[in-house]
Amino acid sequence: MSTIDTSQRVLHGWDPEDPEKWDSGIAWRTLWISTIALFFGFVTWYLVAAIAPHLNEVGFDLSASQLYWLTASSGLAAGIFRLIWMFLPPVMGTRKLVTFSTLLFLIPLVGWFFAVRNDTPYPVLLLLAFMTGIGGGVFSGFMPSTGYFFPKSKSGTALGLQAGLSNLGMSVVLLSAPFLIGTTLFGFGGLETMHNTETGEVMNLYNVAGFFVPWVIVMAVLAWTMLKDVPVTANFRQQIDIFGNKNTWILTIIYVMTFGALAGFGAQLTLLMKNNFGESATGLLGWAFLFAMVGAVVRALWGPLADKYGGAIWTFIGGAGMTVTAAIAAIFLARGGNAALPFYITMIVMSFFAGLGNAGTFKQMPMILPKRQAGGVIGFTGAIAAFGPFIVGVLLTMMPATTFFWGCVVYFAIATSLAWIFYARPNAPFPG
Image (cartoon, rainbow, N blue to C red; front, side, top):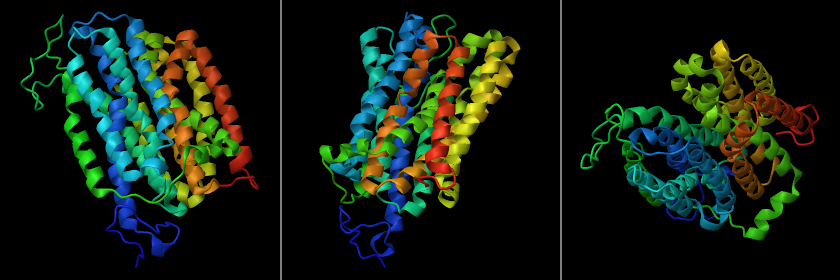
């Protein structure tokens, strides 16, 4: 029987490592509500990636560079916002953090709902694209906050489920966009129907943003009425002590490999294949969403295995697999032409290994670090890795894709070596 008073908003005496001071029902309820809210955060983050390719079809006259910056700015913003949100869990508490963060998704969603008319100035579009980064930014607040509710023995499962299932929002918005765009009525029938300026087909671009607005409101209400806080508090000065721990930096390097690459390639894969394989990739472009989806699903499913066998071994296996598949992908890129299919298959396999690495890394953090520091490190590593879509996009414009991929091979090999030396090898200094 739990000795804490679960009727209060703040769960005084909460200690997930002590069965008498932990309530599994509250912990799992917190996980599911915050995960669904975070799912809509990732939907919001990738909203521009779903809308931008169609803007010129409904009457905009934007250059390739302008469209690129619309997509890239959301990745830049997510990294910046994560650097803010990583400090908020011990300051705001879970209930207020999840509720108010979820309500913030409405700013870019409602903004894009009205902005897809072709008389919206480009600076406004750029600002709204930047604001979608809020959806990716809250990750660094939600994940540490959820971590407060679970014992170390269940942290891999809990954080794997939250990260993996919420990451599916990236794929869902990309997958659902064509259907939503071609639909006339989704509760917004009072608006004028939009059409492709050349073909005349229905293109209700506002549906992509508008469809998700009611769901976001529902999740904000659920968060406010059903979530609770645990008394984990720390001021800004106390939280920055994570930067004196070398594991913060090592795990950041590793997580940039696993999640940074997953998010970065997920945002750029369609353009990457189109630019490098031309017509031979046409039939595969509609399946590019699977890259982010496979990594997210594997991340969610591998949490229990990380709890059972430890996170370090899966981080190492994931990194080794990503290194090898990046090298194979570089070879297929160099061939071009008819190598589109083997390149795509190789990228899907890379996504599988990225999912392993993500599940393993997020199991390691609560095991290696004190609980308060673990939350900060989860937030910081997530913040830096969120720059992935921006970094990948910028580098692909600066160098040939094959050169970029060989650079990834080198980076992945270094990160994987660090995972082995510090965490995965026998008698490693920080097993976990």
